[in-house]
Length: 486
Ligand code: GLU
Image 1 (cartoon, rainbow, N blue to C red):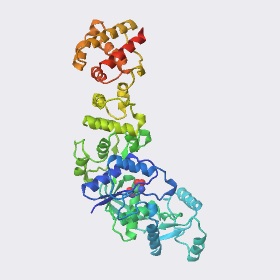
Image 2: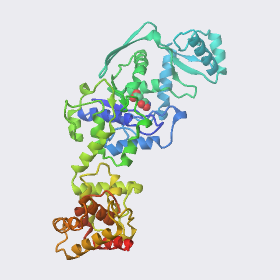
Image 3: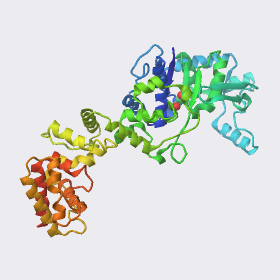
Image 4: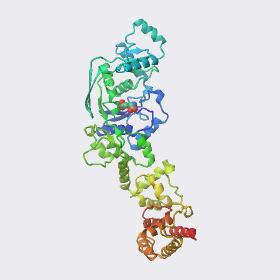
């Protein structure tokens, strides 16, 4: 049974890199009928950020990456918060100390700083100098009672070659002589990441550790802990980094980095999943669009690449637009309504008396051009405004004056009143030669109409827009525009 885990530290927002890691774990579990576990690595008490875990879980929820065990989903290997598992780490460290594979260290932070500076000035590798390993028993006894900064260090065996067959990166090896005796239990009795991570991966029977490449340097330490405890290590796969377009590590400098910011900006979860899947993985050399089911069916670790992936926001925008266009009109409308409910700042103020039919028509007008759900507000707000609330600026087009504009509005009004049925075909037929009659360019005439009817320089196609607005509203808006001229 495959068991994988996503092990976030609740120290910040859900970075897209972390969420991509979670997603690859999820896909791998689903692909093989295994379990996807969320384990909260909250042992660094000084770095905890309140609300961070909720945001991380919300991001997973948003993307449909449901976990089988973890917060709010009890399972046989719980608790799933490391802060509630301290007894496991204590008993393991006791065992390691008893077996001389770990030892107490009483060095003060000041001594450690001095040591590091000395090593640096002598151009030696920095690392713990084993001062406390070499204390005599009476010295140890004396220090033990008095020390407030007592920690436990892992005793790194000498002269070992540590070898990893990484599922993604291939073979990597390290020389244990270059690794120091790192801390496994801190002075606050909490474990360090290294110890807790290994103990929990073992106790939770994790079979594959799929994590970001930045953890690769920690892996030899982990492998040595597994060896010291006589435990089989899981398989490891380190996923490629995600870089910004300038090839530096993806950061705030490149724009939004929290998955939830993408939610708020109006990206669809299915587009986000599709986009993130291609950050370091591909099905073949050409397929770009996948449903979640396709991804689950096609996901394999051998197609995760070693080289870094580039986060290309234009591609994400394109994909989001594509997903929006391929949606059923009703679905898109419901999505927009849910989105507006959740993010009222991005919402339209839609009066209560607006019919569903009107809303659907409005949405159908923008579906082709909408890239983000958030754009709907700007593109369609005028459909729902009171006529008198339209902001009319720059009604008079370049090369026209108030008099010609007045005249053009008048002629248009007459046509609209006389028209049989008020639809796109008739509007095109009746309005298209007005500009020639008045010796105006099409651009001038339509520009004027667009401003008078929508208050905007850019809108959905104007005749379609007029049909949806309806004859009465169009007449009222043109009359209002005209009244500002006289
Ligand atoms: N808590 C670590 C993190 O925040 C987990 C690393 C791992 O997966 O081993 O990414």
